[in-house]
Image 1 (cartoon, rainbow, N blue to C red):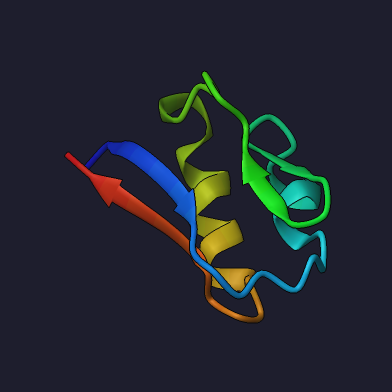
Image 2: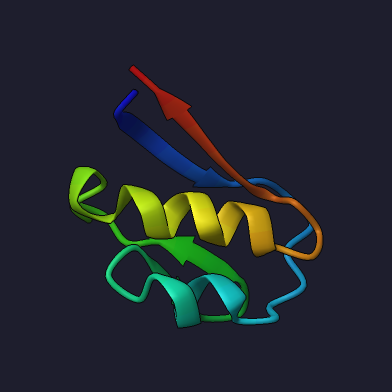
Length: 64
């Protein structure tokens, strides 16, 4: 199934794993943020990997 929405829940520890894995989707400021307008479909595998590797499991996504 295709990913249609990605978000970061409260509790990010700013470890940078998501930005390292998928810099086209995530950026690190004070906490991780999803880049507005990011091509989610082109980066589905990286989004899934970032969610799996997140040490505090705050990366969430919704599939179609």
